[in-house]
Amino acid sequence: DAGVTQSPTHLIKTRGQQVTLRCSPISGHKSVSWYQQVLGQGPQFIFQYYEKEERGRGNFPDRFSARQFPNYSSELNVNALLLGDSALYLCASSFNGGNGYTFGSGTRLTVV
Amino acid sequence: GQQLNQSPQSMFIQEGEDVSMNCTSSSIFNTWLWYKQDPGEGPVLLIALYKAGELTSNGRLTAQFGITRKDSFLNISASIPSDVGIYFCAGQNYGGSQGNLIFGKGTKLSVKP
Image (cartoon, rainbow over all chains, first blue to last red; front, side, top):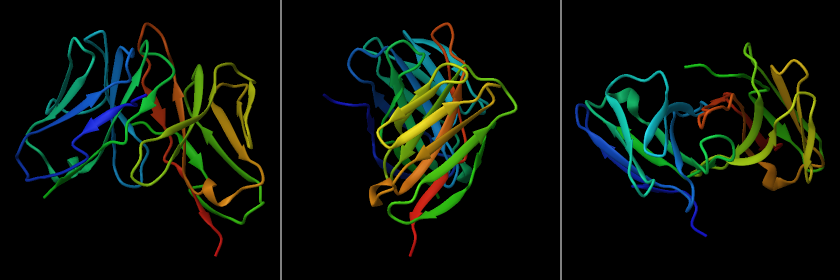
């Protein structure tokens, strides 16, 4: 069975650019959450979506946005990239938005 | 952003030793979770705790949900080389199809030279 898949696995962007990260949840899971993990820290919550509706938002600037599609996949967009946005971006899916989160392997974003 | 207080930050283990780590919070949670993260991978759930006072085991791992609902600990008995990695605690308040996780900063387990 496929787990949570994220793409791309790595990418390098320049300051000021925009980036889109993608996530496909486990089949049957209706909720997707996004987390940012800076080197040496634990993951920080960015967004949660359930049934295509935003259910939670962390303390991140408006440059960060996300959406969930009818097939429950999700995209995270970051505009006007800053050096500090360099991190591992993790996607997690769950059946009902509550417990039972499964994480993907993440997208490693480097901003230069 | 908010992070839980997790200790120790790092520790060295020798095969066969028992390991303990804990996590505290200023806030109450109704769920405590313990994850392990290997290099280049996402966190993998080890143990989930749903009730204050609950003690749960998963093989050589044992975790407890503190009575105050503000803390949790994880014990690993008879450590083996594959236990090396970073362990994270996470607290969650779940309700209404939402429930983001608040993570600790992690405990890095390394093999004693």
